[in-house]
Image 1: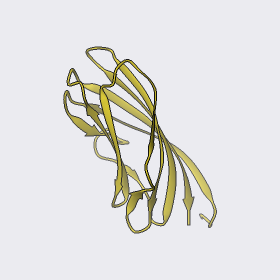
Image 2: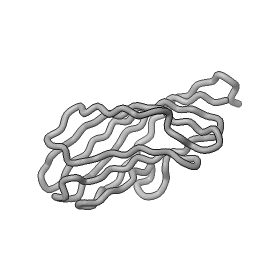
Image 3: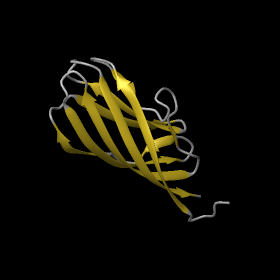
Image 4: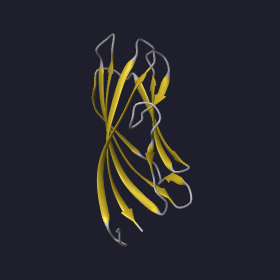
Length: 129
């Protein structure tokens, strides 16, 4: 049983292969399962993304922080923040969005050189009402 004021933490891995010159969402199962945001809940998130461009060996490691809420429909709270920890070149673009009951994380290939293997580790804290 969850009581008002109870807090939870979780870590989830989301991943996918981004095709050359394209973009893809990252999923918990690699194909369709997005992170769900339950009703009447707010979550703070921290995402660590590691991406490698297969043909060149270029790597990008980035961190994202923000919050999402669901008070009838999932929505981001304000603007999320991006930190480029280190990278060989700027070959990806990230979009984070929320709607319905889920949060999505999209990676786009800017270089168009080769497929990108992208894996993100998502940590969040939830407050359940």
